[in-house]
Length: 395
Image (tube, rainbow, N blue to C red; front, side, top):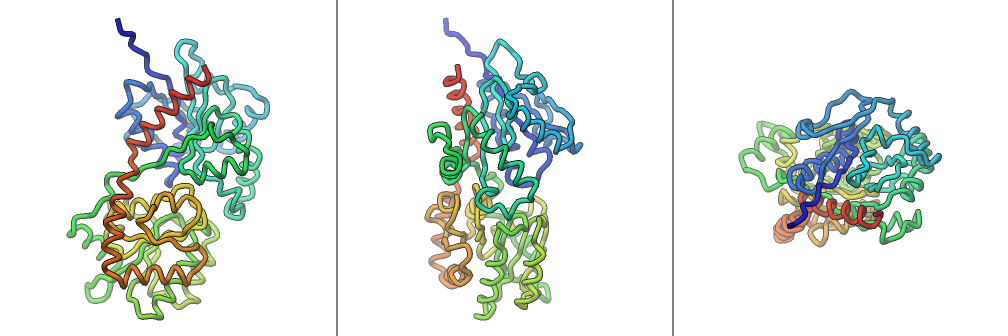
């Protein structure tokens, strides 16, 4: 008689999906959703989060078994750090990991791993605070400087979202290469070449010209913060305007910190009529915004993964990106890559996309093919394999 193996008990910290609205939130919510949809026969999933903000779980996760605590964010972070410093597994009962029957595994989906005497997996998205410390607040930087090496050492397995993040972990912390598994994130199926009528409506809404016309635009998507390198994009745009190109720059994303100098730069470069800050836009509009752009730009100084590159390519939009961190491995040969702080090279690359229809057509086709390699279903499947391997090696 064949023995039926009981599903593996996994507790997944989904705090980022509850409290945030950026890449970590999307990763955590999508991973949980695809684990529940595709792997319920292998994984018995319990969600955990610190309910300090009062925000609810995302709708798609609300029927899942859940455990919470309620501590101030700082108290929770310091408490987790204390468990590692003292090697005291105080959170195991709270997190539902005390079962003596089935091996229980804890997955820290963001950079916060309590100490426990159970197998643990931690996802590391990036080490920006190490490479560009000026782009983090002092308090957060000090916390991560102390905590991250402890978390990396304590985790039984680390999931890195890119080969670049894996290299950073090895170089900066001496983490063993065989302890780190690269599992790429995915692109949502909603990102695809759009219905022309919908794309036209969205273009009209976000980039109106005069007399009911639509003004062509370049697109940047992401939180407005120095790491995204909007300053270089502004300088490149000024060069394009001097050459007579009609495109404006449409900037989509919530305002982060230290962004005032870029807003001042817009005026100094005479770009008030050529840059539009749209803020957050409804998720339903974003695919059409990509599809309607002449080119999407991501000249970031550092990205752990780089969702806008994949989203734009999936929508059939040419991409010009920086050639650093994880972006070359995500973009493949489907984008034009330039040094992030070289506004001359950035302007020249955009000029090629706008001025060479043959190149633009090739980039659109290659982009769709490249984006198809990244799917949340693949991410969930590979994560399940990481769970199994972690249980096996810690048995």
